[in-house]
Length: 94
View 1 (tube, rainbow, N blue to C red):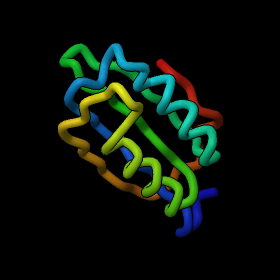
View 2: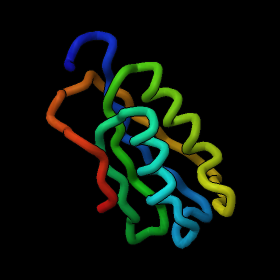
View 3: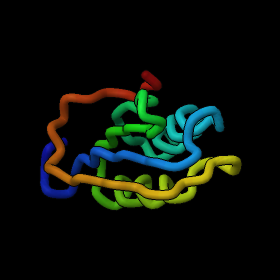
């Protein structure tokens, strides 16, 4: 799972993204795309997530983060991409 067709994205989402089911919606979306990783709230009000899987699906997931669930108010999404490591299994809300 660490070939060139797979990648990892470390993402920070800011705006009105806590208390709007962002984490659970992110988990559902990531699982529907068969991505591994996790999502968590940060003390500063942002949401942090890590996605790993096929490059096209990782990009699709990062694009989804620009909108998020219906009641979210996403202002900014920062994504850092790196090669997949293959050390994640499943997707969890932390």
